[in-house]
Length: 457
Ligand SMILES: Cc1ncc(COP(=O)(O)O)c(C=O)c1O
Image 1 (cartoon, rainbow, N blue to C red):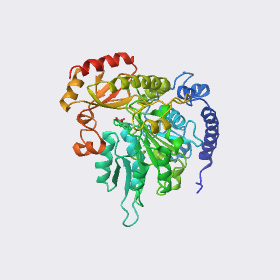
Image 2 (cartoon, rainbow, N blue to C red):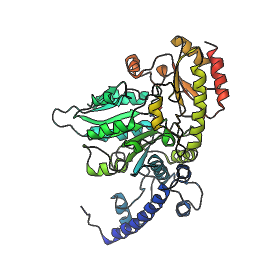
Image 3 (cartoon, rainbow, N blue to C red):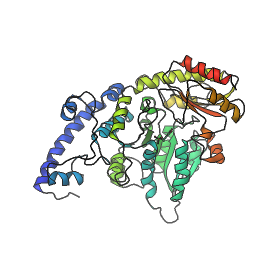
């Protein structure tokens, strides 16, 4: 319904509509550019640089907590969402806005439809923001609210789903072989609110048939949510294959330098959900930002957005290089007698190699490319895995991944510790598993470090 506004407010609305139309036209031009160009410039073009940044060639940091208004009419128009405004940095911030626009453009690169992005304080905050409104709605009488997820998800996600969401009465139904679309079909029913997959999964390298899963979700009128943290939009863009929402931990591969914790929810316009209202379905990420996110507060710091914008500019270059190095390291480990098994989607004999190759290619190049995360199990005991791990000299021991510096961890004693033995069995995490994320070093030096550590078992 049209809102009655005073002439003073209307003046601001008219001016804002002109600016919005101008900005949309510029954004449409950017959408037609190549991936690297979008990653380098985002929507911060020459005109924007003079309008917002005194001509500075990189997006400025706006550390201010709040925005001043010229008068009460402008304030009312802003706070009533009648004009675009950033008002208060818990809700909007110009530097965060530049990052959101760039990520929305990269994630929807090559898609017919458009998408919007909401940046959050962390990857976990992004996942929570993305799923909560879908579960919040009370079910019809007798309907058990549930969601269906691949069991192979990051340990924090496993806990969020298995513990926190159950506390609220929404139960997760785990799919242990998520690459089999039929296994999902068996678990979806009237009470299902969404399907959720991580691709490739951390650390097991599970993957799904994205297009088939999106089709299944849509048959049931629910969205498919995909955590594509490890792939990044430089290797895979799930929206192009029918997914509705993509979540990222920007802390990881996107933010490879390791200076910022952050997350993102990127949602297609016109999302499939028979549970959400019209406004939410039309532009889910913006709706989240204006309502549930505003009321809960997990906002990204402008300094983090600044670092992450800078990382995005070289994303394709970095992921291409690190993926090639990871393939070399995986090949070395696969032939080593102290290694029982290597899970890397790029290995031609990996059971999911062909499925992954359908979805993971270096953007604007087309070469199947599988990212820089892998896991392997040591031929021996849990103690042998620890001996190997403790002997690493160049590869850092850290509960981290996605870095430009190689990092390794033992998931059973770190990322997946809290989910207990039963949870780890379900997710396929033995105590001898080592997760390795290969960075930007020369692969020969990474291999040399692994080789000397394997010799110490
Ligand atoms: C695949 C994946 N998703 C989400 C997260 C959570 O991200 P954050 O640590 O930024 O909250 C992680 C963290 O390791 C992850 O690996």
